[in-house]
Length: 460
Image (cartoon, rainbow, N blue to C red):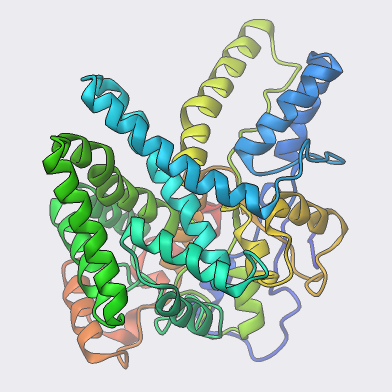
């Protein structure tokens, strides 16, 4: 690990093979990390404030709450309880069922103002179920492969997703290989969602906003889940899924629960779930970047953790300013970071870089503490590469889009059908040169050498 005199970490500082081209230099510059993204001082500042303000018993409880919301422990902190894999599984399934029931009750009681809260919680419970499905894919859920398959089947049924075998083919044999985050990665959303690399960063935000606000997005998403993803599945899998769907529709019609089904299940699982999925996807990996770097280096650099916390206000601030600063801190913690934690990043979603480094050996039920131990004591097998992280969902997305913008445009030799769609998309952006030879970030974005500075002032 090389940290220069300013405290910034440059993973390419020791690279001595062939001087890279200008566009690769710009791309590499976007991966230089500032101190806050490689250390946990933000979390330690909050811990110090709690320790000097509250008695020990209350401080321990507050520290546990902050650690759960943020996804980042503080130095020498131990978990209050050890949650087993069984507890995680029961929480995921039980929480999903109870949240659906709460939504049904809210609609029946005409308490419409409760529904946005139920939608956010159910979306999060959907992603908690997906985490169970994900660990079943890696065979790290339970020792019994049969139990893992049954649980994964139940998850795929209630969420109308692909089967375990189909997802394993995509995830293990594509995403967890040399193809990770490339245009050959089946999970990469670069072309299918219209996010080619090398575009101005503002383009990605506009494109994401367009997808979220366009109803057609959700129509296509529903089609994928109900039809496209099911085409290659065996007949008994299709029969089970459509029997489940028919039973829900027939049962709700028979008992007069059609509004309840629509607002307590369909809207959160086919609209809100899609929105939180887009936010999670474009805050998790640096898609389509560093394509010319070695596979091992790409694996450790193209994923980061997403912590949810602000630095504690300085204790030296004047009293009035300190009160205002702490009021804003608590407002953001409860009104922003907590919402993201519940709806977008539940369970063990935060330390995703740790999962990619240790997909089979991690103790995923305590991955936040295990990753922190690696940060402090060196990551086994990856000691020369810092763990990196963002401190809010907005900062994580800003890092992803900054680095995608610094990468070259897609290779014209990509699949013809995909390339045609991308070229049409690129043609709509006037600032993009028509010739691939002019597709360096310096030509695409005014002031491209300042791309690394975009990371120094993270979005909230």
